[in-house]
Length: 99
Image 1 (tube, rainbow, N blue to C red):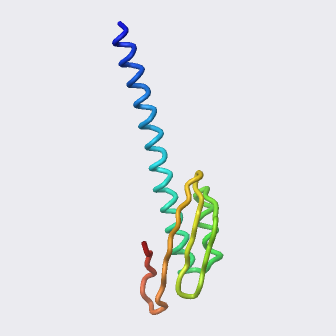
Image 2 (image 1 turned 60 degrees about the vertical axis):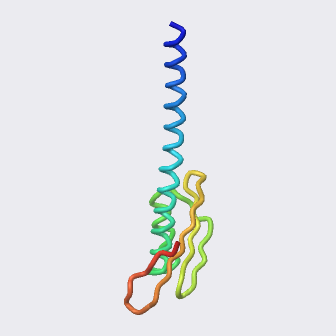
Image 3 (image 1 turned 45 degrees about the vertical axis):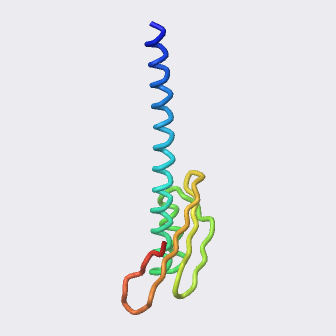
């Protein structure tokens, strides 16, 4: 009987740890997607468009550094910071994320 109780307890603790780890991974991926979208929006439509993409995903803008050729966006999503950098050539080419 004691073995069954210990096995169930360990199983519940393991499942709880896996759920917590999965949430951290999902938040990190969502944060990167938002940062990437913000950086691409910035080089395509200008710095003002970053706020639209970031606010739609319940994230907060930490920093935006923008020039005519590139844009770097840092966002905070559920206490997870992510950074993305995009460049453009202004020669009718697609803007490109840099990693």
